[in-house]
Amino acid sequence: MVIVTAKVKLQTGKSEEFLEAVRVMKPQVMQDPGAIQYSLHRSAEDPDMFIFYERYESEEAFAHHLSTDHFKVLAGTIDPLMAVPGDIGKWVEVL
Image (cartoon, rainbow, N blue to C red; front, side, top):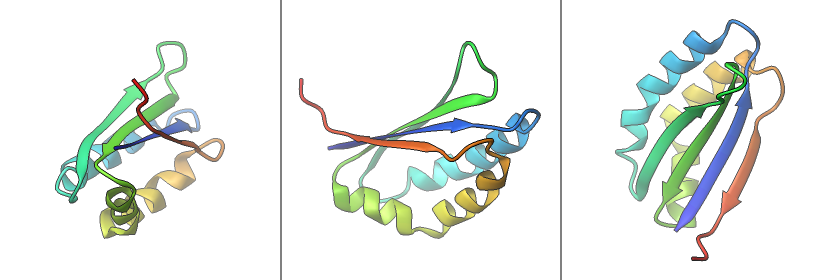
């Protein structure tokens, strides 16, 4: 299993546009082979800070996700909304 996190800091006032783009993408991601979980969380302290938490069956499943048209559309939509580049992390379960 592969766990991916993506911390996203948005420009002020861009949250609704960002959230709408993610709402459109989530059901598409959950149809990707090997996608287990795709969730988005908002910071309790900063309304412009979000973190994606994603789980995939394998590295190959995550690589497939990155190659999809819906991922490319989301990236093209949200990149201009971000205040700084996203902080991506890959994790493996140990316990």
